[in-house]
Length: 266
Image (cartoon, rainbow, N blue to C red; front, side, top):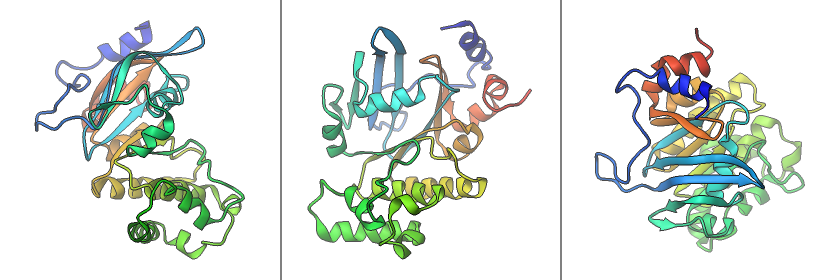
């Protein structure tokens, strides 16, 4: 742990911030997703260093940190885009770090990527249908499409519009709708507030909370710590590839180290 990481971690009052989760929580729930001692590299350069994280069914967990802290790499490692050098990843009780990204998606992960990455030359309908490309249950797919329209009425009004002609906020809605069309167990979201107007940011996070209230677990990678912690159950803070703080969201919001380093308070 570097000096700055030690300073932030050391600022936590005794007992105020919990360590990374163990195998089962106090309610006896088994983890939905678990990273155990995960280290990753880009070539010879180490990016994540012995990272432990856990997400339980129905939880919303946020991952916070500054630029180049390893947040997006963590997400890519969970998805299998970046391979694990040491440690393991388990999803729904199964070790998945040897599996391909498509295998992990098939097992119930979905992603809302940074900068949306919708298909710009496909219509809204086609983009949404791409989220369900592994599914065969037409009736349930139609039900999920209606659910997406209930969250994002604008998408239902613009089914024939090309995705690339939509605003940034509308594209974020489309990316979220596409993820929901896979009927996931866990949605991984990378910087959902990036590049959006404040009004859209507020609305997007309201919808993320609605999705989580439906029982879908959500893992949000986000620089906007105040907004993310305001709706999350728990949070982790990364610095130079190491977890330096973790605990209940409300505890992190009042932690002195968090206030100084990540929330812009003195």
